[in-house]
Amino acid sequence: MDESETEADTDLIRSTLFYSDHRLCSADILSPSQARARIEVAVLNFLKVLSSPNPAISSLPLINRRSENCGLRRGLLSDVSSVFLSHSFCRRSLMRVNDAKAFVRVWKVMEVCFMILGEGKLVTQRELFYRLLSDSPHYFSSQQQVNSTVQDVVSLLRCTRHSLGLMASSRGAIIGRLIFHAPGEEILDCTTLGPAGHAISGDFNLLGGLVFRSDARYIIVVEKDAIFQRLSEDRLFNQLPSILITAKGYPDLATRFLLHRLSENFPSMPIFALVDWNPAGLAIICTYKFGSISMGLESYRYACNIKWLGLRGDDLHLIPESAFIEMKPRDHQISKSLLSSSFLPESYKMELEKMVEVGQRAEIESLYCHGFDFLGKYVVQKIVQADYI
Image (cartoon, rainbow, N blue to C red):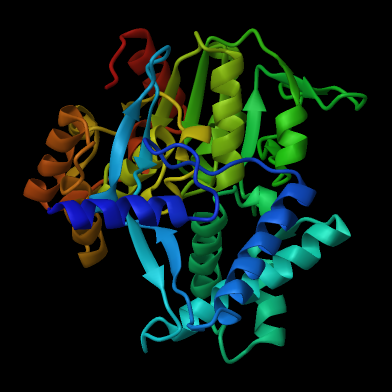
């Protein structure tokens, strides 16, 4: 790279709307007025270009959210590592055929967010999609387009989704040896709940203000709701003093945020993951552990040091041959993506390579061949014997 290219990159960094720390990119938590101010600055900058002596449609410099621009940030005072994005940029330009609609979508989303913030409301991205589908059907035809554009806005304004008035859609639930309450609100004892547990709110303001008490020794993150309810029904948390939490599949942001808060409040309480033995199960663990590349500007706010309890390759002897399922193309696609990752721990890589070699996957429910009460015994034994990675 020659000197002119280096200077150009430096100028690009300094030309971003909210340039502060050159070493690491992150999204700020802003008040509604601060977030509205950033949107106003973006609009004023755009109008300034249009009204200049040589008007031109400026491109939007967005933080690159691809794997080549991500790294792993390791905590200095903790053993938590998280994905981060560095100062490499991609652009949205009205002058490029493939970018034109994406360029307009950014402004459309900012317009609605500006209105939401002014009204003091919080909406989910699903609600945002239907509003945009109604207002701008030519530009928005799918939820994925809205989700991607929201991340573009986060990359442009360098603030969190919640700062834009967007609330997480939560599927998660929690139960076990945990008592919590919001300031001034009624106390909830999670040991008194039914098997379905307590639904996790998607309101980050509420989750951020919760006050916790617990005599648990472990936190167990369960991939599936059915397994979560089985362990809850068996009152595993009384046999093994623990807190059970599930996102009912791929982890949503609210569940990740609550788990991160629990890990900060109880730093000596280890966190274990119980997932299917397949590439998707490992991807779930990695999302809890490191965060996601697409949300790399915020990942450090949700990452936690989670350990892989099961299912793992060493447990396959417990599963009858008839219970194994052949891996599908989607499984191979996920495994290829994970294996190409630079931050996948070696022990996880070996497990994944074994899945690919065997060409089969196994579900947690396969352990029911030993009886419905076996699952709880399996979890207890694995933890007591420190059989996790």
